[in-house]
Length: 285
Image 1 (tube, rainbow, N blue to C red):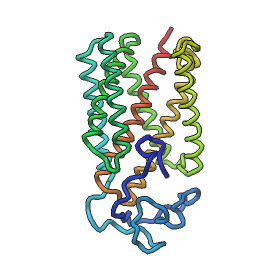
Image 2 (cartoon, rainbow, N blue to C red):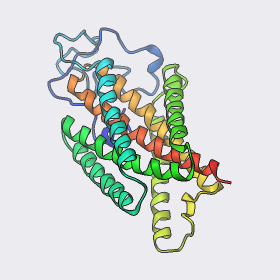
Image 3 (cartoon, one colour):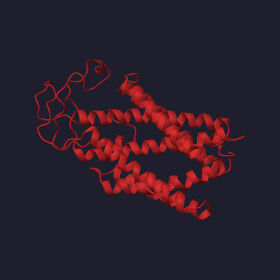
Image 4 (cartoon, one colour):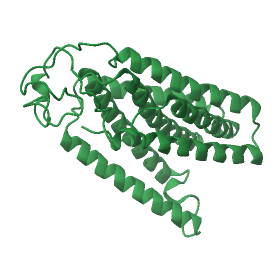
């Protein structure tokens, strides 16, 4: 199952060397819609390639495999870098035309670094942390801008992002959402349609056809679009959780935890920005 996250959409975790998984077979409830259910190793990017077909995953014979602790640690480092960059930008860059220009420049640099990492075969921590730092500067400036108009909006957006993430993780772990191929196809179709509509809306606004931001206005229509965007962010999270879970279960290399952290950071930034807009909309008179 490939994630819709830009980092995970191009490929799974590294396939080099072949991996052994944990010493437990896939759960029975996971069989329906799972391409690995009948044979855990058939077309599985994480499975050990030279193992006998049909044999249950074996415990890793060597160390250096990715664990949940590795993912949590790298995610904390990446998100911590975003937070530090945002705090410094907030403290050192007052709301002004100059700071807006720096925010746009930082966003462009962050996007370039993210694209470079996305097309590399292995994660590069320097690129990932560089992306996080520049993304943090961008978020710090726009958060301060929103806070100057709607006091407390960034804090509420952070709480909202945490609530969406926690709720998504809860329903995923409880099995209320089953990430199957059909689930991913439907979700991705909606996500692609959303991106296309937003791109068209941006063009209409740029050429003056749509006023006040069009679908991205600060009115009721903008609120509906924002809610849809946040729900898509939650959908991306479920695919990311599944990708990470599979990587751990089938013994992805330890350094792939950086890739997991990068993907989660991209998704959380998406949710935070949309939540910030939504809080601002509901804070308007």
